[in-house]
Image (cartoon, rainbow, N blue to C red; front, side):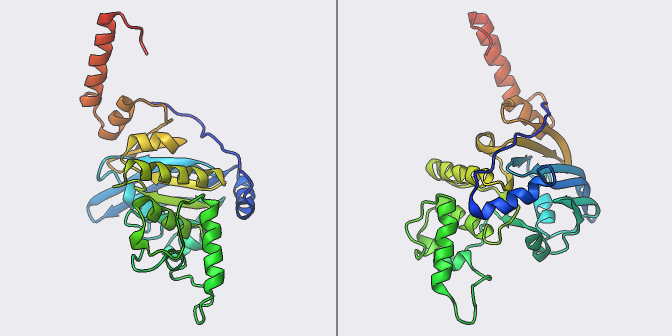
Length: 289
């Protein structure tokens, strides 16, 4: 198991992100800090004494088996659930996230796995859904300009902001959902399985998008079951198991280490395969990797 300080990334100076970076850097880059967060649903303990730190310009991957508590933790940060105990510190202040609006006001945006997009509406309408400019007399021009600005900041590959979302690929839909989360200029973005059910090209597009968000000084928490996607963009990997912290790893950790932490078993298919490969190399006289 490998512990260490997170890798910091430089802010690339995008105008809308400059103030954001200075605000978070005033707290030594620490955007979010959780201490001893616990949550019970009746007799079921979903989370027990969870600790988590996320810095500006950092992608933290949250991994674990089904039932590990990942979604519950994200819902607590999104204001859906209140923790039963523990403290949440955001940009240096202890906060209470008692509803989703409170999270949004603080600067916590969440992109859930289902994306919550309206397929019959175009890109502009989806980005501004519920936050329309001058809702009594829609300012379509200003909304379209702002939508293009957001998408250009992310180097998004979307042919037209007037395309219905139904005609977009999975990767393009994820881009629209992330662009919508940036509308209120958040400090932290939560991504729930952003590459689930995507093809190879679309997955690469979304991972590039996550890197661009990180490079603009935002803190990102990413839930994923795909270890290759996690390694591609994460600065740290936080493992949850049965609702508890079970290790912090750097992206160069081996599959064997990660699988052992996720499953709680050091003797598994991954470890046995690694042992067979090592034995084969020693038998053939190959140098150790």
